[in-house]
Image (cartoon, rainbow, N blue to C red):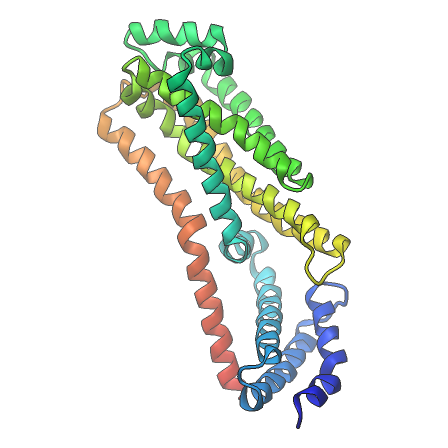
Length: 330
């Protein structure tokens, strides 16, 4: 059979499967399985007669998507929340992994700008951090308490205030992505420049080590989550600017749904950062240094694994399941 005729013969069926994947048409698990088996047969035929064709690539992608939908339907019946964090978010992070890379590149660039600005302009820290904050911190450094600013207020009051503020900043970082991603980059720029000038300020006064022992206890979760939130804003923005073969509205709907799910995954890390800042950071310089390091690198390992390593593991597992299912069907 010629490929053109094969496509013409099955085009309507494949478009219908696309609508099922996009949620426009609802199907029960048995119907989904039937669609999947039918699609696998088409894929097998294409792999045999048109192995290097775009049709084969398209059918392979379509079968992967419908398999995910079947897998998701089964897993949701078990535990929706567990599935969300264990499978759904990692698969989305894997799909949009290049945006996470972009966000980190911008973060490093903007933070470096903050450091360089503070190096060449001694008043830059006063402008960015506020003269009152700078003067208070200088006094704390002279008194041998570089993280003294974190010791004011009650533990629970500080935790609630800090957490709500950080969630607000994260939401702004994400939602401003609606302006083509530029809004998210602007918020990321503001916070990254502040971080860079902030760290150089402590270095300039010989208190970088003490500040790092305190700031990065909560900063690992807080800053990493901020970068992921910028990633979500970029996904949202590019879904509008680059809709590909979809209509702009359909692309926005998909981008909004996917980016919002990834954004929600940062909330637990932001809450944990607030708890650490409210309850633990105030004791940073009284703690044994090895305990500071355990908490800092422990947090880095957890969040780094979840967003950088685990998505690849989940995707690999899904592909293996897909391959095994194909082999069983064929």
